[in-house]
Length: 276
Image (cartoon, rainbow, N blue to C red; front, side):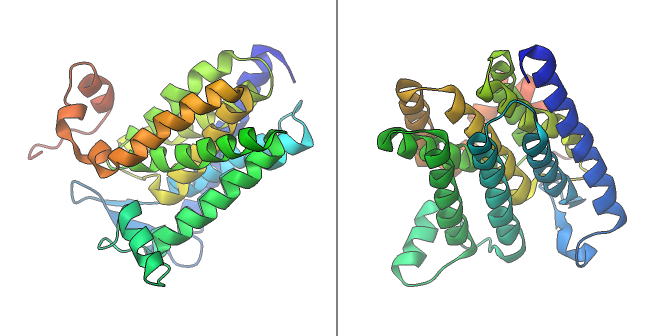
């Protein structure tokens, strides 16, 4: 598959698969419905089906896209599904008392494996495995792994307000649709999946959760890794390292999100709450 029509077809397939999965999950929740219910920042009850559906939709589109090599297909699908699975585990087992890399690394030093530690190790390993499939030189493989795992973590950092993480995936991924080749095809999948659940996310009917945010981030990271050479990979890896270092400040610093321009884009389409 080549050309803009091919990339648009992949995006459309991801959106359609995501919507189909979302409807099915709402009709027949996996295990028990209460496992997928959460209270959001405004005290409203939301569910996590949008994230599970987006993960499934992006993976399905990448698995069925024409024109991808077997290695690229396996790398992107494997990274997205592994990241989504690790995120889903954290959605179910995570504790609000242990958040951030520091807390999880500290627990590992104490011999305890937290749900965040599972994500750290699992998504890191999946990113490196995907990097091995996407690149041929050892350094490029490591850099690609850092980009894939780092992008998954960065998208998850933003999933603290309705629509924020999905908008980030669309904003970062959309320019990739202009690229020819593997990177453009892969970018279309997370963009299409994020767009498919954006309305429900903004309306506070659903949220991506760790499963959806990590899966879409890993898929986007695979697209970035596939499209870039060593210099591009280094630049992305450095930017992601800076975001990781900033950690929760990226999520909670209102000076950033209230900055001119940023506030307008971030708040677009979001439900207004009379008491903040």
